[in-house]
Image 1 (tube, one colour):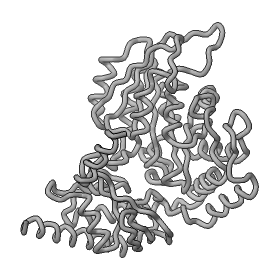
Image 2: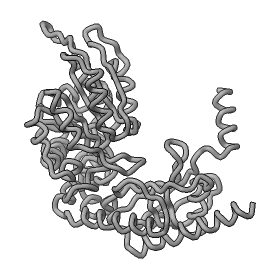
Image 3: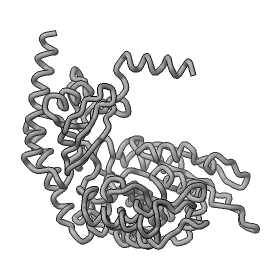
Image 4: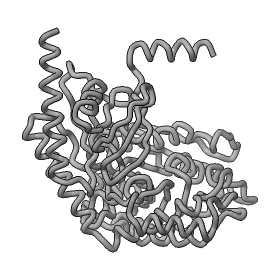
Length: 426
């Protein structure tokens, strides 16, 4: 462990690791936090939560979770194919299917497990079936800025959760430039072979850049490869884009059925940690036969199913979104307002969604900027410097008021001016 100790010490000395905070209470967007290093406690206005619709403290959602605990207990204590499946799972799957316009859905504990299950199931199927043999290789194309859960899954796509099977054909992975459809088309033309099973996978909304994948162009390109699969990770799209929060297809005025009619097979991954006030993930498809194969995957059969209170909270959250689309409208209005105010004050806000990355001048350290914003103004934003290009990552949500957003702009402007004075003086 000496290498680990030396590495950590050197990183600490250079200030490379993120500050750690412990939450003690929350009231809307006001959060009482403690600095782990110093024990200092303060109440701050948060602009870094992914609770985009403000449903984490919604009374109906909270009561649904409580009722589920009282009815089922705190855990199912088994995987879904043994004794861990409950009626709430079926209800949630049906609710997601209706929300995403795809009839079949499978639940997972999180997006990382869901994406790995998809690679396991699609590329390597489940168990050997006498008399059946698949000889077709898989070609996967992935956006270079895809989320880590996708990167991890495709890095392991050549095997089935670490196991090598003699009956599994080879999996080839190629990356294409971020949202560059000319590059995607070029890579497909270059690498696709006549008998390949083709899969293209992309974030719908990119978690660090806040931009949206060009879905219509992707469908256009893939329609030239009949039977190809298009996977959309809607972690940051669900509840955030589209007139009623249904995600990227609704945002572009499309239905998954329109992709199907053009020979493209749509798969959608929905996660619950952002818009649905919970945890967990799901994959939806119009291909019924895919679902049991996903359910038999190692990341499903090798762990417990989604706990009852978590399932119930996600279920009620989606019902709330469907019943109250005005929450989505407020989020989108707040997004436009905050982005406009940032631009008015000469901040470089990239992307187009409620995920608002603000790229700072190179002489301003995001970590120091965020720390001063918290200490001097009681405002909490996420500094990013260790997992992407340096920036502040701000998230708007449906509960933010204009006064709160104006307070953020004022604080950011004052911190920028103060840090520039410090830089000049130095």
